[in-house]
Length: 459
Image (cartoon, rainbow, N blue to C red; front, side, top):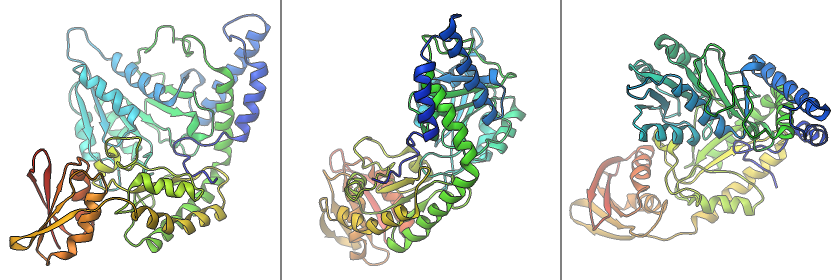
């Protein structure tokens, strides 16, 4: 089965696999011990740290290995904030973009729940952070740390890290960059203070992350005994060795492989609007990750569509609010003002062929048609003044939007369709769809009961 979800976790790179098998024999001992096997393990650990530092363009003593990318993010934020705490004063402030990975946002919200100031900076319709709002946020007195991804994990938009770092430097605020999607592929612009990454994103094994803390940065170790750069309790050294071997290999291949994958992504970006005229491409069309493309397909349940593509032999992902692994809409798409239902994220791993991409494009229209055939329907009742009421109570997304699109033509231009719904996601999707389709969202009314009624004027 072609695997098109490398943004979640790429298959283990052959170089990483070979290194893992060798390290299972040579790197099993405690690298802190002085006997022979321990010294061998220490040599492997030191060599891995030096190799990772070379790829990232930092000093070896600035590199820490962590149990995951999420742990690297959490410990990086925690250590950056703790270093600026002052006894008897308000907790230091934190600034993040609205489209950060959930590991960043969960840590940020925990900080806010403890009483720490939190500024969430908005983004534009492409998912790029608003630099004016960013400068204002990091300039607020008491702000101790800012977090910005190198590129977005859902739509691929590359963030203006250099400009954001310049604003942070002017305000005296350290910048933590989440480089999970770009590490090994592209260099992160200079100016950052801390950097986090996840091995599984570049084709290393799960269970390894990287945290880089530049020497000039004030940082308090988040875990006792971590001053040597080692995780208390010990690292999975064979996995670390494999992760760094994969990182080096991906870095060496990047110049050629990313050009090839970018051309395949361009093919998807060109063909999807022709195959699905109502689909909408998301993210920046040019300043983006080379291997990732996301598009939104209206009037389809995201979970049903992904299952249809899975049955056709293609593994893709979705940030749709309609997939079973989440109860809320994608915070990235919601922050962009994009339609959150029925979106498909295709992220190509190394070695993806043009035949595999063409095969995906060939089955996509049929999968969408199959997914659209499933689901319920609304009860439509006309009322006075050119207003049509749709009862979608009890129907989950994207059916409220699907029924709105199906019935908007039943009212004259200037007429209003009222959608009754108890689906909270509709509050995001209906305005986004109306804007995209050229209609006017008028707001919402209460009722019936605990439901709401969303009003859309036909354009």
